[in-house]
Length: 473
Image (cartoon, rainbow, N blue to C red; front, top):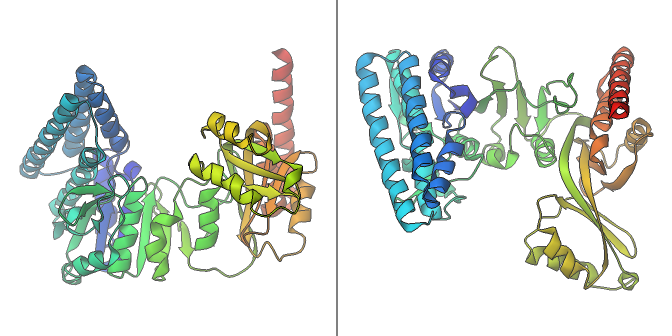
């Protein structure tokens, strides 16, 4: 008994719905519960519809809605669904878009988009896509049951980021097990839930993975597969390190560090319910299903560097005051200011009379710095990036720091943070140094001597080109 989750790019159009249906059909002997996201970009467009309606921009609302209707109708026509089933599905689709227009009219009249209305609007993407996929499977002669996710995923009423009631979800999922045991496929939408009074809620972005993990834990299933448009988790960002490699397996703790420091494939918080039950999670590529992908496990054998993550858009605040020396409560007062301004803190480094802190570049820095300067001297440095070496046992493994800084000997490191976690070694540098730092670290930890030589030649060529380009400017 397995749970398969398909992301928006996996069902971006009718042909992809048909391809996913064939992939599921080949696995039906394993008793599959299938969770599907909205078609690619649909949730973003529905969010846009709500914002446009709030601003009373009726013509633009209508244009976006018409395009969404066209996309869904086109998907139904291309998915290989029989004419009779297509008519029924289009009727349901029309009913859904009528409901969307009712919601939009209310938003326009009131000039207000409440979190409750927003959830009701955004939920329609998953409801439509899951019905299309279920119809595709039924049309292939496979016994398939579509279940409204609001019947299974029960939450509180925190609209936009609802908290699931895992005990109630487990109780409701008991009704699904007999269907699966009888050979029926079960299809539902991700991201969507319902409060105990029946009001539609959503789990926040990444919510479809969360739905799949909650259902996998509640069954419980033997595995959870997240199908997306990449081959798995990689040793580095492929946009920076083109020859990054797929990780065959990684621990949950390591995957969490990668996600926090820049990897976008998966946010591990969303799969925590499955990992807590010891259910292996696999990242697979819908477009290359023959590849093994990456398995995320509670733990994996071996220690050492597993991958490199990097994130741009960082600002550092260097805070200093001689009165901090041996003073108690001073740092607490500093962090109290960050709390009042609701600014998350990222990397931290301290000395006797100073604290260095990084935050996202979008943080409300002006107000934050104004209040901080009542307590400490503040230096703000923008245009930075965070690079993190991720792996198990890094705090106690001799030689890791030496190898890191040997690779970065020509790059200025502005901040270092190591020791709070056994699975990361983090440093901050100028944004312009992110690419060479990532490449050289990848060479140091993941490539053979010959591969290093080839990569160095490629990088030197790239640097020469950049230098020539700069000179020409």
